[in-house]
Length: 502
Ligand code: GLU
Image (cartoon, helix red, strand yellow):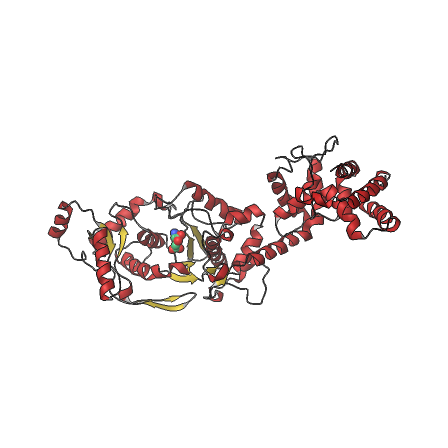
């Protein structure tokens, strides 16, 4: 690291990782790499009711899958650890004591009902809602009296009573009037510290210099600025206010904000469908940022080289699954067949088309078949589905490629395509192919064309469809003649023959 710049990605481990989160991680990562800075990964797990270990593991797993490496954080450690907030409770208690002692915070004894009453009064009077300030200046005796009533205090931060302004890295100068940012709770009456405390405290303690995060957190920034100023005065952290930059909203269908609940926001979905990390990240980079020369296809390393926070737009970005998928297709086409076949194998395994550890014949077959599907797929899952026919079992036919896990069958929805005309085509094809000794795609093609088109006068569209269906079991498959070559003579003939009996 050759600069003092430090950024952080600090998700809360609740629910499944989503694309909005990944976009934030990516922009922080690119900013860090561009500036030879430090990328800190911190887990904000202070909400025991909502956080889960599963979600924590998924977060780590997701960043690793995406290749967004962190310099400090879980598993790698660092000078400002621990990096899980649940392990930092003693630090927060200490800071709270200091804030109380310096009068930057105070104990608030108001009950939920009383706060509700205050809100009602403000509503009726038409004044800005917010904490009334009732407990701001309680004497020791008044506090004691409340305690005697059995009340347990929450801890509130005392806002400085000034308008707060900052120069947002994305949105320019922003200002919040003092009336709109009332005193806020930092520790619940139960003793539980809140995001309002632990997030800026850790940013200060971890010497974070730039906070890049989603626009949904904009309203917490004036509070955090006030908190940083207080922390600087009591000697907690670096004493320097971080720069703030708010990344634009990501919109989903119908001009609504993309929500965690939208299926296209679930990161896991992309992994399961066979998006490449490169493709997904390339698309997410475009949500609010651009290379500046209309270039839309780039790696995150190229993004990092060119990343300039000034090029982040303040306008909402629209999430478009079609475009995301198309970019993934571009990435798939850019891989070497060797690389692509390696990525397809786990998908074939997952679909029970290959055993956990494929044998050499099976691996070779995937490698040979990959170039045939590379142009025809946008996701690895689609590719695996197209290659599946090579590995199904054919009763009574011995073949090293057969995975032994799933018997071959024609997709049920396609069975009606095996019409009497289709059967006569299959009969002619079977007859001709069984006499072919030199089993390669050129010879297969020449033979089938001569037999079906020239001799029997079928149109190509009608002639080859049934053979594809009989041998691949589905309509979308790699090119027919190459497929038959890869499948081998025995299995091809066996399948055509079986189709005659459906
Ligand atoms: N834990 C917060 C969240 O996940 C972090 C927000 C921030 O970046 O300040 O929303």
